[in-house]
Length: 565
Image (cartoon, rainbow, N blue to C red; front, side, top):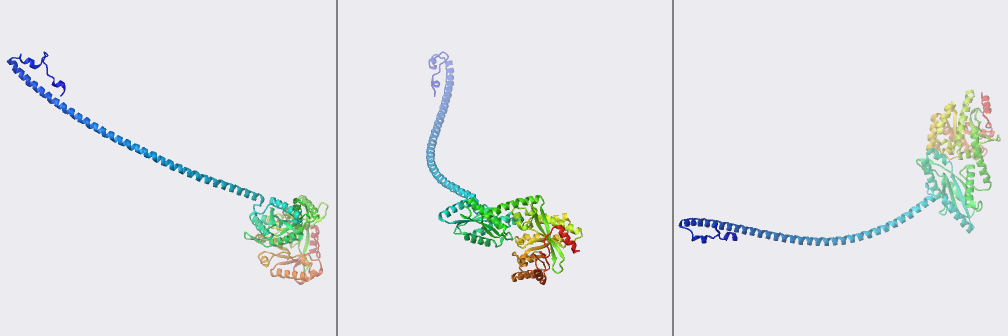
């Protein structure tokens, strides 16, 4: 109980109760007793209150103690949590150290792997760079289409061959090759077939030479073969013959059976030239000489060929001028019935009227016209003029069976040939059955598929078809059966050899073959009565030649037709 509660109470005078007791009266005593009881009650109440306050204080103390205990417990928990956190932090630090160590180790491994990979890549890049360099070098020195050495590599090898030949006292042979009539095939069948033919030709050429020799492509249809060491010209000649023979077999490409031949020019170091350029130039010159001599042959260079090369160039220029200045003319040679002698038709023959007024036959310029690309224009002019003139004769009342016009292989295989024929017949008004197209036997064999399609297109127009120079090519009976042919013309070389047994046997065989195939047979080059008699005895239907008349101008031929009336 607090001191305030136990202190004796004082009255209003400031004295304690005990001090006042003696002074009380009896009445006062009752009063005092009551007061005492009240005081006692108050005192008791105060005691109760004090006890309650004490209890309250005890309760508050207990509560404070409990609170302190809770706080101590909480502090203990906090300390435990702190210890746990410190332990976790320690674990994290240890884990971090482990992870760092592991990461460092991984980084080291990765760095090593990257280093190895980088080293490998560097080596790969180096290898690829070397490979690319090698490929670029190969591409720079080889033809893209055939993969043969090109002009650059050939020139280098020719230089080396000349150096070695000079050191070892040997010769070097260079052969310039051209595929005959390749452009006809390329123009008619397309560049894809032409490219495949070039690839096939390249393989054929490589198969025909030694491993030490070089086969090169110079572009287009031109190839060059280098024979680095030969003892004499005969070695080059034997190689040329082998190449020509190897190329003669048909090339089967895209469903087409293609036949090409080779024209070869041969030049030797040091006999014909002393340097690379001269050797190449001379071989090229000899090759053109081989073309002029009928193709499918070889020619060894001789000094006089240079003069021919210059003359060839001059002829080409003159041909261009002649075409522009209309200095080509047609002459007409009669075809006659060998039994009656009546004129049954005519063959239109091209002539070139040169500036010196000399007439030049086709054998002297047609090969040049083909090589320089003028043959299409010249041939188209000749076909149109022959049709125009024939229609003029017919309108004048001069009857003519057919007008035969020679068509070159290049013209025939042209994509626009049929269109040109239709246009010319329409423009001139000539009925198609009056026109007879003459094609050489060898020309028909260049591409049998294209040839067959074109021949049937002509037949559908109503045009007649003749095979010229028959017997000199390499057609077979199966080809003759498949082609829609009307006429076989026996080559004049066989007719002129009728006096000999071989000529007679060939001519009689061709006549019999033509009759069995129901073809009309015409003999060319008849010059003697003996030849005529033999042909009549074997029932040859028609003929032409000097025996009946030479080719003449249109006016003179009209006179011959007039006499037939």
